[in-house]
Image (cartoon, rainbow, N blue to C red; front, side, top):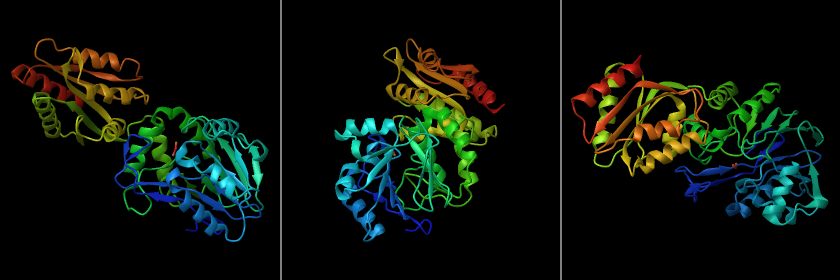
Length: 384
Ligand code: FEO
């Protein structure tokens, strides 16, 4: 696949993977992107996952033909991109690695060598000329690890964006970009909104015509759409108006409360109501929804004087990703000492700019007239 006259795609599709990064379901697989820039100095951008060593090396060979790469640029040391560095260096003994100082430290940790006599260390603002192509290196710490650099090719106006602008899904499957890019972003980079904002500010000064991420499709058209979404996500702004009801229920009584609330929200004209049964849904989808929509209702039974484990995991997933700037409603259930609302509030204590509804719904075992009235009041508040 040619991206420009000089830049070729040499990445791979992974349909064997069960869990990406050990936790994310990827029904449509995953792509590990890698690129070759053909110029006086031939340059390979990143490697791919360990399981695809041979396919990737074959792709590189096919792209460079009878020539040999001069440089391997490593933008990110997470093994889905760095696993094949050693094999590449063996295959091309004259090649040098260009990367950040922190990345070389990690190389030594992962591979026992930092290729001391074959390394070129770059930092923010450095450039390297390949001939026609002048590569500018931009530090992107914590997008998604501390060593990350992204690379701007001023000749073809391409931003090699590392994990930024990536998504789940192999490239041979057609699917909506935003849905799986959002789940990917919130799950993997969501904690680092400030750092992504910093990178977006640097990117704003560049004339970018193409974005080449390390996962997901190459973005060539309507780049403003993708940049706007990244700005929304990384600033923790509300992307879509609506209410997410995330619930955990054992015998169905808390679920009935969640369903009643959903019904009333719809009746009152709430633009969008999303229900997530935390024991059964994809946790990453539920987390994505919480970050996408403006309002979140947490409904759970009290369990071992705490909240039900799936709710605890869900809230932990939110707080570790700097969940903020949202409206929260709480529904608790308990048969003798309901304390779940207090526990949930405490768990969310460190989150910035959360607004709790005045109404908190308390259910004693099952819905009754009193708790139904409270649900109505909660629906009213959430629709205001
Ligand atoms: Fe795609 Fe952070 O590795």
